[in-house]
Image 1 (cartoon, helix red, strand yellow):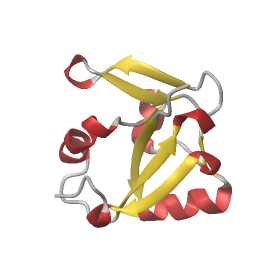
Image 2 (cartoon, helix red, strand yellow):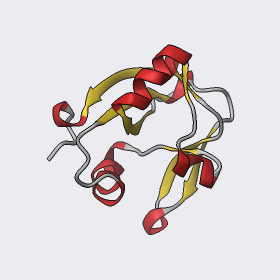
Image 3 (tube, rainbow, N blue to C red):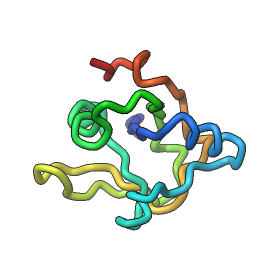
Image 4 (tube, rainbow, N blue to C red):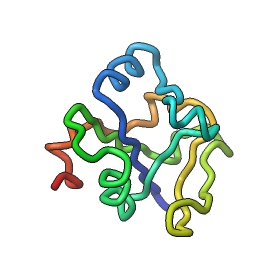
Length: 109
């Protein structure tokens, strides 16, 4: 099976809360849509610009899709008719490979 990595952008506080709880739960925007919004690597720049412009309290979580609950990750049509990864359920901390502040990530700037 091919290794698939997806990304989640969240606030540093949400990440700290998730680490303590063992999972990242749905944010307000996620709850509105019924799933946790994730992005593929080539979608990150657009996601940051559209939904997080000007924020400085962000963390980018790198997620190993193989560690997510079976069937919970679905690729669905979203922005610009592109397929985006959506997670139906909480994001287990065990699936997170790394967490980097936005300024330190490869997607910054």
